[in-house]
Length: 259
Length: 128
View: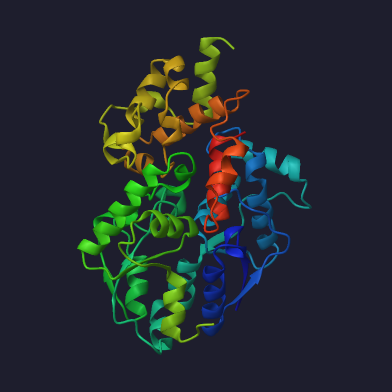
């Protein structure tokens, strides 16, 4: 099957590992990720101000492109997923934002939130199926891995509807499917400090160390994430407590499709 | 803009009803940046309800909130403290000369590993 794909700014640059491994694995699992044309950066954080319209337009353009190309939009970066999914909800449920965005965009047909936004992990779970991934594994991981969810995939749960925001299981199920042992630790859904680091570098340092320490104490040998900013924060500010990788890198390893 | 208009503007910009707060404090209890906030998440809500605009506009906490939505998730009354923080931050950075980060501060702190996502997010949050 083919699915429209939105890579985002960082997957084209510093997070090529995430993009490359995801494409290779998808191909091995029978899914072709078709990059939408002329996509623009989503802005990386969802603007909450109720009068913010212009800052949401790039997400709406991507959603509209996917609407005319299969009706589903696949995301991989946690931030893109958060911004695009929340913007989609605005287009569906907030008449004022929908009206003003369409007024500006003047599309052939107004966009009203028709596209289904799907994260790569949701694709693995709901479209490919973890059972089928298990069957495709040639090199089971055989090690203890801690899932780091962070904030963007889970919250606000009313809109994201990704997993239980307090006790998620999708990445643990993923780890099991590729032959690893998931390690559940208390700080896996705590924010790592994100963008604050550019202004106050101490804060992400404190948070990242706490997260990795928590994973190590519960026995994790490495930590995986779907977010390039989490990866950067944990790797750079986490005090080298544990190795941090993209979840797709482990999938590629297990499927034997490493580039 | 009068004080009343300022209050009305913050309420509208946040899109949340601060009067629904029942002061249980779960938002601040869950906040990962709690110790680094001079005004705590629950105080953003109560201070806006009380119309304490001047103090809100002068606080440091707007630069330390992660917008991680943990407070929003835990609120049993459907109030969004993070949206109040964002409304205050938006109001501040939309004023002339009040951006949280200046362009010339960026090059010295950029290393070759910094993801674009960090620069884009920080600029969105701190600058207009």
